[in-house]
Image (tube, rainbow, N blue to C red; front, side):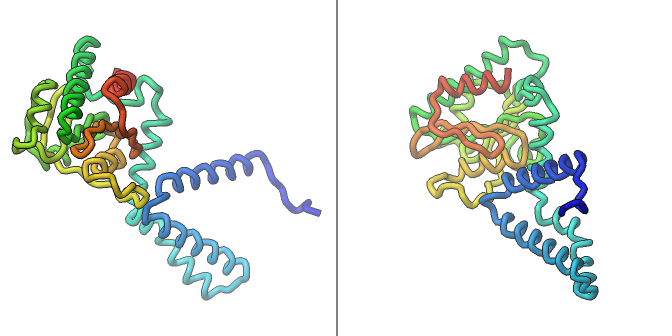
Length: 259
């Protein structure tokens, strides 16, 4: 009955790859305004296929011209999602567990120095949490963060717990904004970060948490957030947030991610 249908192993692999690609795209844009645009474009493509099958030449030509320039339109409309998808592929699938994360500490320092930097950062976050002092600390990896560094004030100092606490003290000029750490140095403070555009983000998330999610959606950086309202510590990477972690848990996360 279905002898006219010939399915080979290549066809099966092709279908599975397309399904995987669409699933990954959906996971990246779900909960955002882009999902509605994507559904609209997909429905337009389905209509074009039906029109072609019915040999409606005029309508098929018009829709074909629209879809013909669709690739450029998709890049423009979904530029953030495309960048996020490529970043996701590069950091998750093209690197092993040891090299998939570029340490924010310098490659030239030894393990003892790295451990000391982690302990200084954790100690500062614990003290900031106890005093309910808000903090937003970006830990750079492979992505170039210079565009965000330029929005703040350059510091270029060694990682020091007391310096971090001083910068985020409420009465200092540098407390409002993000601190960026890269290659074992505090590069800048009072930096402006892009806020996430995801619609499903809870309303009780403040601007620090939204900015932390936003920068990790645009780059491969990780972020540590201390809430000014509750004093809770959060860790953010790849747009996903772990809220209410203890300083001990934070230390374990940083040791696992950056050693």
